[in-house]
Length: 143
Ligand SMILES: [Zn+2]
Image (tube, rainbow, N blue to C red; front, side, top):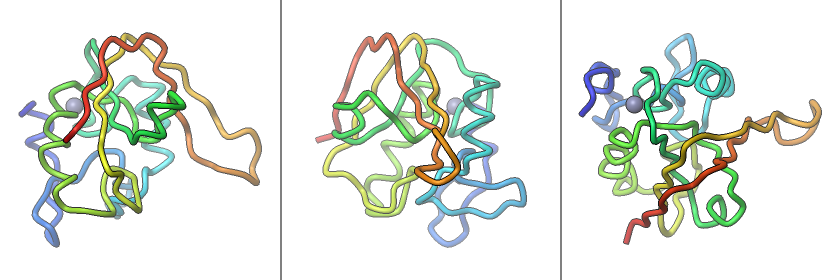
């Protein structure tokens, strides 16, 4: 585990590390939602959505089959090691993790050289920041 990930707070209710992207600046945690301010920081400052440390290449995204199909991800970019750690932790817990109210049937770990971001088109629709990997090098699926 990367040192910065080991230093993340532990959610006392479920005993797992709190990803950087699901904790707001006041320390409130909702594993089922990506905090938009955190997603923006991950995108603009190129930091990991799990550990909050600077990203290194290749980057990884975790997503659902639909996200892979659309090449559009909600959870911010990750270190590959942090993505692997996340997959070893959260899917077994069922619904409500990694920014998803409902767990997908399978998760994909996508590695890429970079990404583009898509901001909300206006203030009325989907307000999530979306990530589009632009040079995918591998896609690995959970069983
Ligand atoms: Zn990380």
